Length: 230
Ligand code: CDP
Ligand code: CDP
Image (cartoon, protein in one colour):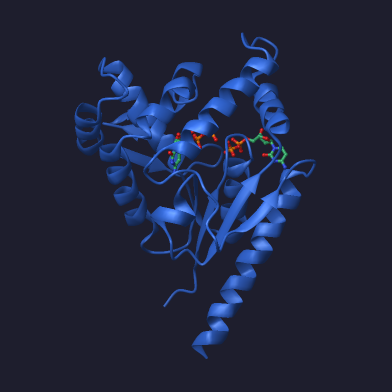
């Protein structure tokens, strides 16, 4: 049998979840699953189809019918939708502005959680998102809630955009705050720290420090399981 565990990493936008989750997965030789990319893929399809992002019926059906494959890559995870690689199109400002509406829809969340649980069945998964520790994998052996101050999170995202970005730091901070609010206030599986999650504030810390801390917690959780089995 395997002694692999599942690691859930939740938190608001720009906290460093994907960066750190990828590093933790690589250190433990686990599989990284970016659940935000799945909601972004549904949003892309919904917008392309001309559907209202508030239409649970239509967008929910779309989410059930579309084929989403996550391919672990050395750098970014590739996202294949209905045999098309859409990875480079998932992080546009338009998707950023619409994704939290699509993510409120019951039909969409139900389907995503189902796919995500399937991916984690064999254990050895580092999954990042908003509702992984609370809803998708409530039995994950290690849960992390990763945060940083809103200004720091916006600054990180601003730096990623580069000098040609047609948005100011203040605008970006406001957009992130709006998305966090929608994610926190939605009815189904909102963004929330699970009672048994460890809180990490990454403000002023490097990605290496944060990833190393999580790897150590992961190894400790694995040792606990091994000790219990003896
Ligand atoms: O990378 P960033 O933190 O900006 O966003 P993301 O992780 O790609 O997630 C994009 C959006 O998808 C979030 O703002 C949520 O609205 C939604 N999401 C969700 O509802 N549940 C998840 N498990 C993951 C993402
Ligand atoms: O997935 P999430 O939206 O939580 O964040 P991300 O996509 O990993 O983006 C975080 C950005 O901040 C990346 O450019 C990281 O290099 C940087 N960063 C970090 O993640 N953690 C730190 N402690 C410091 C910087």
